Structures are given as C-alpha cells and as structure tokens.
Amino acid sequence: MTFLESKDRKPSTSEAKETRIHFLDDAKEEIKNYRVYDCFGYELSLNGRPYILSSGVWYEVVADFLGRVNDYLNSQVNTPELVLPKWDEVEEEDDYNIRCGMLPNFLHFDCKNVMFGGGRSRFEFCDFTDTKGRTLYFTKIASKSSGMSHLVEQVRRTAELLFDPDQAYRERLAEVFKKQHPKADRTWLRTRPRNEDWNLCLVSLGRPAKNLPFFAKCALWKLHRNLTARGHQVFFVSV
Image (cartoon, rainbow, N blue to C red):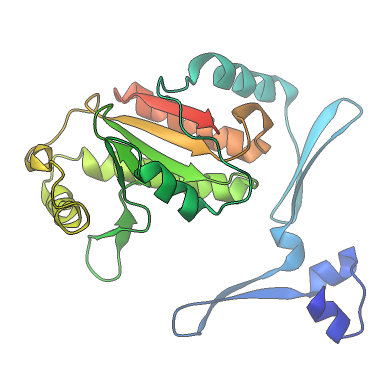
C-alpha cells in the first residue's frame, strides 16, 4: 500500500500483476523477484467445487482427492500425549519456542543452526525437544501454505539427516548440544538412532489440520505418509 500510494496508484489486480517484490541476500544483492500477484494465495468454493489460487494460477481441486486427504488427516495423523502450552495468538514463534524450551525435561533449539554439508549449508535441528518423551517439536504459525511448506521441509530434513547411516551430521549436532546445553545428555548421538527412537511432532500455532490451506494439507499428508512408512512416529498438533 505504501509503495502504491507513493506512486499515486490504487490497489488492483492489474497493479498486482505489474508490481514486483524483490528478494535480497545478506549482501543486499537481488536473488529473485516475483509479481505481487504471484504471492497471493486464496481458496474458494464455486458451485460446490473447490478452487485454489497459488503462484498466480487458479487450480480446480478434484473433490474426491480433497476428500481423501481430509479423511487421512482426520484418521491417521494423531496428536502427542503431552499437552503443550497454548499459544496466546500474539507472541512470535521464537517467543513461544523459548517458553516451551523452559518446561521440565525440554531443551530449546530454535535458530540454533547445524553447519553441515560445506559452503553455507545450515540446518535447524528442531525448535525444542522433550528429552523424557523423546520427541522433537517443530513449530510454525501456519497461516499460509508457504509457512507450512517450510515446516514440512524442516521435519523432512531432520529425519533425513539425524537418522542417516553417515555419522557426520550427528557429530556436528553434538557440538551444538555441547554449546547450547552442556549438561544435556548427548551420548545418544554417538551412534545412529533407530527411526522409532524419537518422535517427530509438527506444531501449528493457531490453526488445526482441518483448517489448513489446501496445499498445506497436501504437504502434511505426503510427509506423514512417507515418514510413517519408514518407521517414524509423526504427530501433528494445533495449540
């Protein structure tokens, strides 16, 4: 709005298709740019049929497929036994993660990157973990499909690296443990854990699975199917 006002223009579909958003790296160099219109997401039902606007393109969703995804999320995706603190709908993700990290037997890891893979490759282990319940938690204010995609990718990468036969990632992770939580047990990182040794839990701040955007539902559906097929215990909870 501020940009349009400075140019004496009014919000419209045509302006959204002409105006571009520029993404910069740490050195303020442009990485990519997109039309504002491409950044919009919307879902609606017209004549009983669901439609999705994503990346500037309208899609008609096959009702049968949407039903199968919803049925799967309702029947196959469980919540963890431990009840997490409620999100107050005001605090940022970082603040919520810090609050949960202060619970008994919990450790906070949000924004604690594991440098691995050479170059600038870095990965977040999880946002916080319950050492007694052996559960890794990953949180996101899932108001958009893009936020959910980030959450799903974080869980996928952690599952891929933490349980990999190669010990290299766990050695780097042990260094993060030592620095952030020197008194915490990290001996379990000396060998490859079994997939069923640690639970993985996606935490949605404020939005239950049934109310997620369509593509967010699909991402959760695909992740849960893939990881449970490999022997992981995967939960989803809204707080």
